[in-house]
Amino acid sequence: MISPFGYHHLPAMDVSVVETPPEGIEADVLGFPVPDPAELSDGARDLDQVVRGRLTHLIDDGELSGSPGTVTLVHTDGLPAHRIAAVGVGARESVDADQLRTAAAQVAVRAGGVGGGTMAWLLERNGFSVSPAEQARAIVEGVAMGGYDAGRWKTGNDKRAPIARLVLCGPGVSAAAEEARRANVVAWWTNRCRDIVNAPPNELTPDDLADFGEDIAGRSPRISFEALGVDEIRDAGMGAFSAVAQGSHNAPRLIILRYEPDEAPQNFVLGLVGKAITFDAGGISLKPAEHLEEMKSDMGGGAAILAGLGAIAELGIPIRIIAVVPACENMPGGHAYRPGDILTAMNGKTIEVTNTDAEGRLILADALWYARQAGATHLLDLATLTGTIQVAMGDYYAGLFGNDAAWIESVHGASEASGDHAWTMPLHHSYFRYLESCFADVKNCPEKKRGSPIIAALFLAQFAGEGPWAHVDMAGTAFLDRGRDYYPHLGATGYGVRLLAELARRLAA
Ligand code: BES
Ligand code: MN
Ligand code: ZN
Image 1 (tube, rainbow, N blue to C red):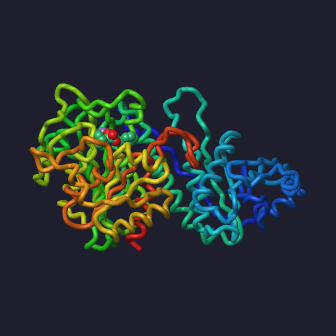
Image 2: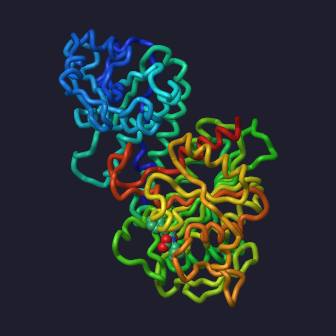
């Protein structure tokens, strides 16, 4: 079996930051943002002079628009940049980092259509409320993520050409060089996460996900790797995780990565836990057939934890981390666990199974407890946990829950700054009524769907041990069934990788 990681091993984009005036930049396409109503920034005005006022003429004739989503391509004949791409970003005062990511992605997609190669971007010095460093970060992410191609299983030569080089230019841009470099690392790992989440469940089994973890560990002497097998998982007392896994012929793995940089404070250990159901059929409580293929993405939380750790280690962020990723399939079959089964979790609590499709909380129960026992002082789990979070929030915000206001706020702040948005949801003990069982300490699923993301989070809270814990329900944001913003196509978003990299950076600062 080919490791999906080694199989699709694209080099990172080559990003450079230069003070050269835009008319001296060599590129296949040079992009810049146009606000609505359309006007040219200082840098764009310099370009306009070199193309003998063509940009101004286009604006005067209403052919160059600042409305979001419009890209106007102008051939330059004579400039080292062969084409100029003016891209609308909407009203100047409402331009945010996401709008810039989207604009950059749109230019990258157009550039890909004419052969990829080198793209340049002219940063605005003081036009928007987004600082030049944040602009640089957004543009790098927009180009790298917007040009992502999920069609690697296609056999023809109809693959989109990614941008190989990105040059950021504009006055004072060199202050943004470090931010651009970091963003490029994080975007690369985000795309690797997308590779893994898009990978079909016949190619990405729990063993393959463990290989991905091992590959990441192999890149840094600061990361150690371990992946427990089926017997070790059972012998560790993980009755909940074992039960979910037992219905599949593909054996489970508990993937454990420890990142221990020398300079990190010893009294803080970030415990990262990610749901990794490599295929969620629902088990005996079988899901309906519609869109069932999307359940290959039910390992999106685990993939983000692994790729996020890869990014954090490559950036050398000094913070201790233990990552725990329970990986298995949730299948029906003669060995499958059943509604009615009573399980004993690693922490000793008994769980009555009332729905085998509420499996994520079961594998996370044991993984959270394991991470806490292994020394995590602060826990964060990422999980595609409930379809109803998607009903509530759609595909832009994930739901954020936790037991500690300060810790929740740390995660929330990192999420908003990173572009992986999450919004805080309530978690009150009163909801525990829904989980009371006549037979066991708790049941895994209430009869009704009302309040489902909150109840799922409250279930997890019982297994998070003492200390801060936060939970991100990313069922709506991990995998898109249609493109949006800087994700031009459906499929995996890599949600969580940027959030984790930003959180680690803030915690280490
Ligand atoms: N993996 C699903 C949640 C999911 C649904 C993720 C849609 C992405 C898109 C999860 O295991 C699940 O089946 N949840 C159930 C919970 C219910 C049984 C309480 C759900 O959402 O219906
Ligand atoms: Mn399920
Ligand atoms: Zn699931």
